[in-house]
Amino acid sequence: MFPEFWTVIPAAGVGSRMRADRPKQYLPLAGKSVIEHTLSCFLDHPGLLGLVVSLAADDPYWANLDCAKDPRIQRADGGAERADSVLAGLHRLSEQGARDGDWVLVHDAARPNLSRQDLDKLLVELGDDPVGGLLAVPARDTLKRAGTDGRVVETIDRSVIWQAFTPQMFRLGALRDALANVLEAGAAVTDEASALEWAGFSPRLVEGRSDNLKITRPEDLQWLQQRWQS
Ligand code: CTP
Ligand code: MG
Image (cartoon, rainbow, N blue to C red; front, side, top):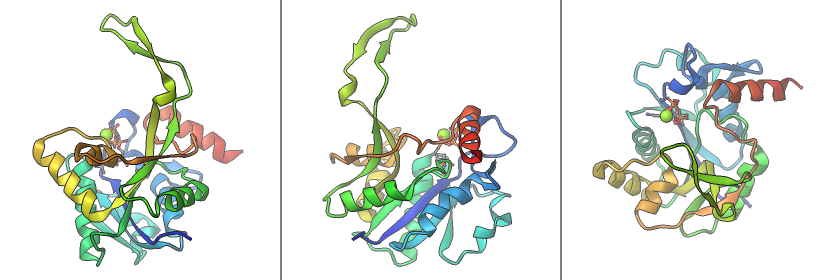
């Protein structure tokens, strides 16, 4: 069976690489906004205890969505970095009654194609894990290390390289302390696992589907739109 869990959806980014007229989590995809697709996979899960979305303080889009009225969703004020947004979400969960030993899944607002199959796999494989871990995908292409002149320095052994996806699943207290420590130290981390690594832990890699992609550039959204039309 699945462990019960809480969820934080960081959604306070501006989406600068998308170059769109609004943050990418609010762009349309198959009749809804990207973030509504993202949320549905969690809201449909029987193990969900509660969910927090971390939003930009001046966000004018969220309040217009139907899900803004969903009583299972609370909001937190996001911050300058993703780690700030996630940390604010964790504090909000604690206010909701979440305990330090509870599982929290952190998932990008801009990653709307998470399958229920992958979510269940993560929960089942990590349910008894002492640390937690993340969905990830083994590198497929041959990998090159580049020099400053744009030429290949060497070919890297791809068998040990994985791409880090989300959800990332950790205990609330351990994740909060790890994120607070990296922020205090001014260390740059782009995912939650990096914060745990910084604290000396080894998060587990759980192989997921490669189509659980994060929308980063316009072609990512086009790819999802075409896929969901057919
Ligand atoms: N995010 C956040 N708070 C921040 C920065 C990012 O909550 N200060 C969220 C984004 O909204 C997104 C997720 O973290 O759901 C992944 O970040 P990324 O893909 O980098 O999104 P953006 O920062 O919005 O995009 P860009 O880096 O292109 O500006
Ligand atoms: Mg960013």
